[in-house]
Image 1 (tube, helix red, strand yellow):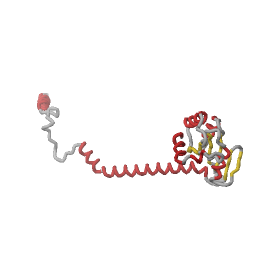
Image 2: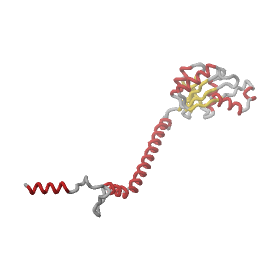
Image 3: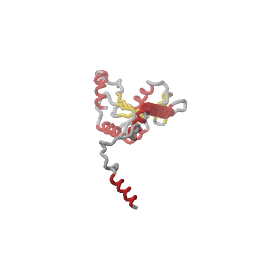
Image 4: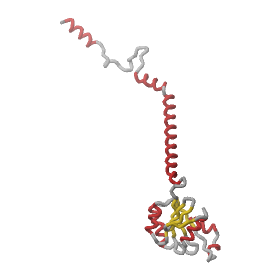
Length: 209
């Protein structure tokens, strides 16, 4: 019993781990701290990791580009072939003195000579379907532009765009437009169109649209 007490007293007198100053502590030779070992292993594979990440990033970009191309091809595939869908061109009048039929025939014959009228629309052999929207028909214009691929706006060479045409244009802008372009059909019966220079006409169109 006395021996056990002496042994415990000796152990209590010996300096423990808590009593040692960290600055004075020394490690055996060959000992590597876990943190240093982890850093060393990571350093060995750092170049490989960067290279692998670069290849993965490049593959991801290629896959995204391929998916985008496939989506574009699938979108335009419905227009290809003899049985493909027609591209819809909605012709919208912003002025009352423009003749819809003459403007549509001028647009259609600039592409092909064969033009046929089918149920209020005009089709040709180039898979184009022209849908003229008469003046001051707001709901018809709003519904037609939802399914249109192109929307040419016709302005008058003689008069300014009235309030009704301006209101229709703002409504279509708020709803959303397809590929839109503005045009002024020439009027052979008047010479006011010829008196204006093309630069002035283009400037007027761009300022409005």
